[in-house]
Each structure stands twice: as C-alpha cells, then as structure tokens.
Image (cartoon, rainbow, N blue to C red; front, side, top):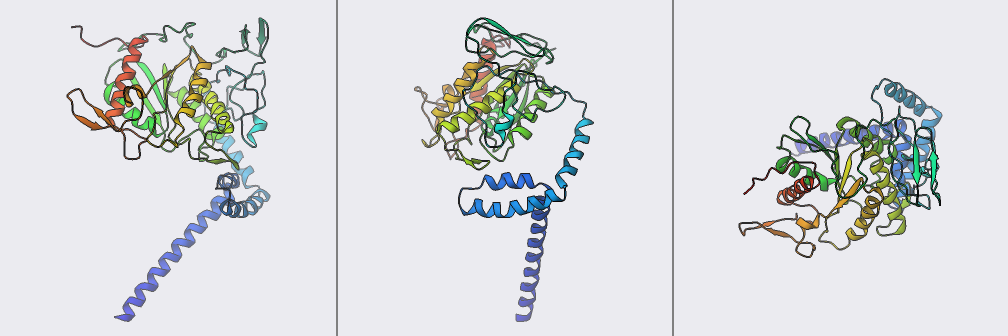
Length: 402
C-alpha cells in the first residue's frame, strides 16, 4: 500500500514538472518572439521589486531577439499581410481644441508631434491620430493638403477631410442633433463602445430598443478595457480597432459609457498614473479626443454617458466625468453628454442600491461591488436612450396616442 502511494506521488510530481517546463517554454518563446511586448509588460508592473525582476528578465531576452533580427522578420510578415488587406481606413477628424502641453506618454511623445499635413488614408495611423491646427487671433483660412478650416476664435471646430467617406454634413446648431429620421428600409445604426459598463448597457439596448425595425445596435463593449489600462496598446490596437469598426458599421450614432477601470493607478510605460492627478487628467483627455476623432470619422453623432456614481467614494467619478464633459463640449455640436444617474440615481442623482418599479416592488439595481448595474438598470438606460433618440429626431415616436 505504501509503495502504491509513493508511485502515485512520483507520477504526480512528474506531471507537475512537465507542466512547469511547458509553461517556461512558452514564456521563453513568447519573450523571444515579441520582446517589445514583454518590455511593455515589465514597465507596467508595480514600481517595486516586481518591476525590477521583470526588467531583469525582459532586457537581456530582448537584446538576444534583436540580434537575431526576429522582430524584422515579424514586421516584414505583418507588412505582407496588411498589404493584402483591401479595406480602406477612415481619416480621423481634426482635434477641436489645442492642448498646451504634450499629453502622450514615454516613447509616444515623439509620435505626438503635430503637423498640418493629413495622415495617409491607406494604412492605420500609428502616430498621433489627429491634426493640430495653429490658433489664430483673427479670421484666417488655414489650408492643409485637402481641407480648409476657417477660424474666428481660439477654439477649433472639427472638420472632416474631403477624402473621408461621408454622405452627410453635421448640423450647425445645438437644437436638433439628428441628421435624418430612421426608417424600416434604412434603419438607424448605433455603435456602442466602452468597457464592462457598456457591456451591461448594450445588452439592455438589444433587449429594449433593437427589436424596433428602424434601429440596429452593434455592441462593442470590452471587458477590462480602459483608456489608462496598460494591457491595451493604444496606438497599435485600440485606435486601429476603432477605425476598423467604424468603417465596418458605418454608424449614424455612436454611444459611449466607460470608466469602471480608470481608478486603479496603473503604470503605463513605467509612468505611474495617480487617479485624480493632473497627469491622469491629461492622459484621459488626450485619449478621449483621440477616440472621438475616430468614432466620428464617418459623420456619426456622439452620445457620451456619464460614468455612473459608485458605492466606493475612492472611485473619483466626478473627476472622471469632468474630463468627459470637457472633451464632449469641445466636440459640440457633434456630441452631447447624457446623465446616467438620471435613472441609476435617486432624486438628487446620488448612488442608490435598489430601484422602485412602477408596481411598487423593489429590485436590486447595482451589483454587490457597487460598480455595475443589473438588467433593470440597463433596461432603464435603454428606455432613456430611446426617448432621447426620439426627442432629437433620429427615431419616430412609436408610443400610441391616447
């Protein structure tokens, strides 16, 4: 009996050793094939012994990989694949306001140098995704390669490049947002983007208003996403993905809810971002502008929902929403803010755990951690959104006349 137990124990140990060796093989292989990714990962570790240890691993492996020219082979393969892709990329809109300081992080600061020439439309723009036009103190026309922008103040109005595929022009006033009223033959296309908050929300949109024949919802919320989450490469992954999804969906309306992951104090390229700090605001502001310039590149209108208040006051929701409001105001009249706490909050717009239904019953509104909302919250937001689309002229009012 003892011999049998010893044999099983030895067999189990061998299995564990094999698993460990396989894991080490894939770690070494991945590090060798993608040293840049490993170095970025190392720089995002907490600024203590963990970052030091990760860098001790990544730097020599990266040096060996570069000597073997693995990255050159990978880049050449990537170019061949991309050259076979016949999809065209939409040009982002021009930045509506001019930041006074560089907002990009680390090595990205070189790619953020501004220019008055348009980016190429045939490939993903891996540098700064928008143009910056100098501020003029008097009425003056600023001419770029293919566009003319007329300025009368220090605030720049976003304009679509003439090569961008757009079939409509935006309204000049704030009173009417809709470019057209949807029909069953030509339904309104809504692109929903954001993080896990939008994942909750978009399921409500699909349940409540997508059954309308004059509406199509494309939900692209991403679990764990955030403008300051380092696991998502902004220039190489996020922005090209936004460009592709807008080109694929061709939305009339883009709706956004985001913010669940912006309070974690992440390190991006070795720089620690303290939530609530001026640098945190700068990065969020720049990336929000960058994202909007791509969301609206095909002429869509933007509804940006405030990040819902959360039960934990350490989540700086008010600070975050002030960033969103500043960015959206700069893009008016192409965009507007929508208050999520109108339906997720109490009469004063404060956080609440439960919601009272029309029949007087009480249902839980927010999930245990006080961040996300249950289906009843997503449905309430969806009803609010439908009413807003009707009010702004995008959809017909289908409510029966009493």
